Length: 533
Image (tube, rainbow, N blue to C red):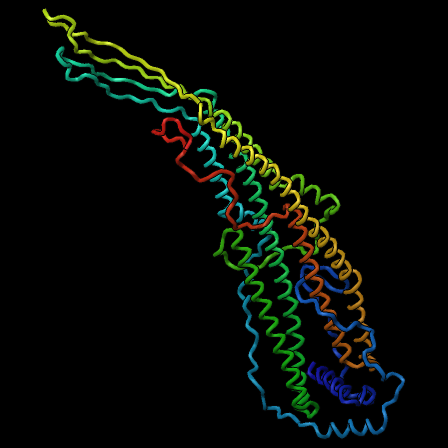
């Protein structure tokens, strides 16, 4: 293996120095080139690879098979230029094998212990979210609040009891009148039922809010899961890239020991390996970040980091021509807006009835101490009294509240239209993004990656037969790696758009759920005489 790596690096050095491959074809002692197998990602099936996945950074790569050495084909190199090349080689500074520039520290293995833990699936995180996400509990508490407000609004006013006394000193007749009474307000016009109906309608809106919040939570969990799954696949890919870079460093130092590489060669190779370490550590950090985000939206921020298991390539099939209309018609957001119209209609009905006055009834029993005869002395004794009264809606017929309720109903109706337009505005671009990313992923899987894989194999075979420079093998290998990364990115984009469409474009799994009613807990107080507030 060591002789194999030395031979590869010597060929690279010879090509970059202008010597060419043919100079090495005459040396039968040199080992053959290594068979660098394709670097493929686990859990994904690609042509020529066991399994891949998708990540970030879409950088254009040199297309395999394209001649980037413009002006060299068919034009032999002048003898003077060859002489200059050899002169330049003799001036190169030999590298001291014992010299090191900077520290050759290994890349931290941040996920070393995590890999041994049991993997979790999307279903695991969805179940965690259903049980632990606080916003779902908040949504349920809003329903209970509106139900209790409805019960309170429909309660009948409490009666009043009291003491009443008149002419207590009695004047010249002595005695006076004193006793007790009972007073009750009789609510007319069915106002109690109408008041209760307002909160019943708000309760229905809050029940829709539970379903709406569930879609928000599930959508966020699914998107966070596939983001973390892509980050995990990226870590695996970056790890393989780091292995390639470290092998190159080992090879160039071996060449330096036999005088076939100098300081610039070693430094450049070490720079590439250090960059690979940075990319590898960054990929690990991105996975940790993605996992913590997933755990937070699942309601378990202290969840231990574990591997994930899932299939990025098993893409959902969506009919984008129909899904936008389906979202606009069936979204819980639209259902809630339509229910808000019913709430406004209930408020308008109640406002129209509130002008009907309530009947005030009052009755009592008292003792009259007034004397009706002088000899013998005899008081009037027990007597009863009763009264009934009603307000006359002369000046205040609740006309202002009625007008405000009509305006609120018009607002609620227009809000339905507004929400429909907003959903269409959000869903249409997502549908196009889904189709675009799906097409892109399919092209990577069936066209780009197979071609890049085949190009790599052909360049490697040519090199083995001493018909191709090894740098071109490296270029094709790097191109294959980059296409696999781009493939991961395309799959990630497909999942993000598809999940958003399947969850009615709803997001915000940790935001406060919307409430149809108010948080007022002082409606229809027992001592308020029947008032609603």
